[in-house]
Length: 112
Image 1: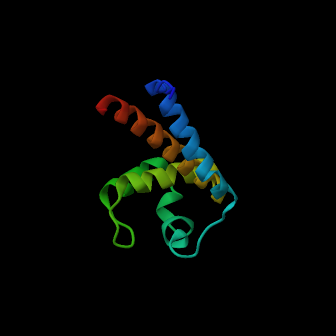
Image 2: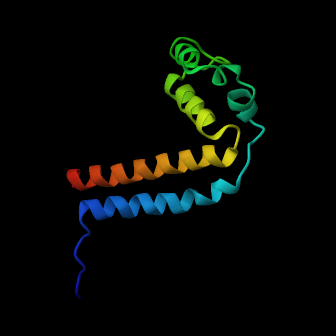
């Protein structure tokens, strides 16, 4: 039985990233959910201020009992970039997941 050569680590990373992106693309059509989006994004006054104030708040305070500085900064960056367009937030998330999948494939290639 003839076997196929393993893809290069770089090719595996790109394929993994593309597969993850394809899986998440349908999310671009979704809107906000009422579970926590209003509390975390839509009604959060700290994400609307100037970057200096947002940065200070994200690194030093909690919101609704949550201290998640990188999460708050990511939400603030998305809000600055996309406004309140849910599809933009979903696109950013899909791209981050695709990047993580590609990096995981590179890591796996080094470990194996």
